[in-house]
Amino acid sequence: MKKSKNMKQPKFYRPSNLQELWNVLDQYGEEACLMGGGTDVLVHLHEGDIAPRALVDVKGIESFHELDADDASVRIGAAVTFNEIKYDPNLQRVLPALSCAAGKVGAPPIQRKGTLVGNILTASPAGDGFVVAYGLDAQLTLLDKNGQKSVDIKDFILGPGKTDIHKDEIISGVTFSNHSKWQQQSFFKVGRRNSLAISVANGVVALAMNENGTVNDARICVGAVGPTPMRVCRAEELMKTQALSEELIESVGAIVSEEVKPITDLRASKDFRRHIVGVYVKRILNGFMKEQRHGH
Ligand SMILES: Cc1cc2nc3c(=O)[nH]c(=O)nc-3n(C[C@H](O)[C@H](O)[C@H](O)COP(=O)(O)OP(=O)(O)OC[C@H]3O[C@@H](n4cnc5c(N)ncnc54)[C@H](O)[C@@H]3O)c2cc1C
Image 1 (cartoon, rainbow, N blue to C red):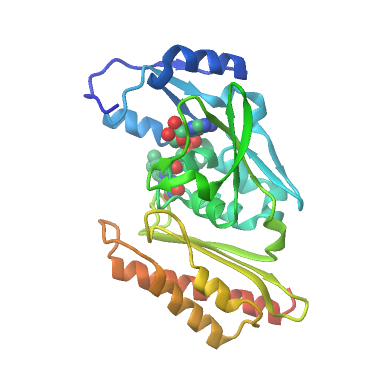
Image 2 (image 1 turned 180 degrees about the horizontal axis):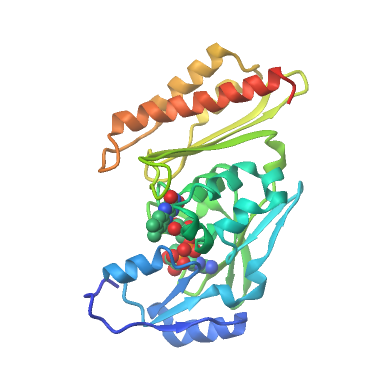
């Protein structure tokens, strides 16, 4: 769809219900472009990378604004912004890694517009909400005119910038259901400055503990160090049934640095990325170990 910059402006639609949405999508077919906050779409439009005839804003659909979080499940509608995710007290309690990531996306103006669904659909290897959704097993709800289905995010992501969404489909929201098992969870982001910085590396680290203080399950998922967020399964496995110790944490950090597949780009070299993900994972695990020792 790449066209020159002096193409006609697209027509803007903000349907207020699903029927209106399907009508617009029927009318324009592949020439319609869905939009949440527009923070990626409008950049691509401005750059002339895309030239849709219709921009279809999903934020007019009331049910897409749903944000529900408790121990059993978390449901985040397609129109929910990072700002809402960042400040929701229930979400801060049950899925703190995601609240934290939301507060690190771009800067407040981007957080007030951008959505988690848009972040996932953009499928940037450096997406901050994306890496948490990927690491903590988000499910996506896909709608078409015939109904809805739930898809595991890992099956939906095909590569950098590539997802398994079809032209007649739309995502209505994201759900998490295994989140409460992660008693300790943390997000990290390494950027070249504190705000308005695309991640040089990012990730989520989460632990489920046994009553005897050993690790029951572990999750380490890192971003911007490969074509998609990647779980470091070898390090996760190593931690299982062990108590956190300085030695174990050193080994985990070394495995993380070994397993990632970074590239050099204008933001950082591959060697720096490889090094820094290991450092941050170790830093988080050391923090978890201290919390455990102090009984938090
Ligand atoms: C200045 C700036 C700084 C940024 N900093 C960061 C950062 O630090 N970290 C980061 O991760 N990202 C960053 N971004 C990228 C962007 O803000 C995020 O990816 C954001 O989450 C996109 O969400 P959105 O709702 O604006 O998506 P949109 O731009 O509206 O859409 C993104 C994609 O999703 C599709 N889409 C949107 N909603 C739906 C739906 N319901 N169903 C189907 N398809 C849909 C669109 O067609 C498009 O392909 C930055 C962007 C800018 C401009």
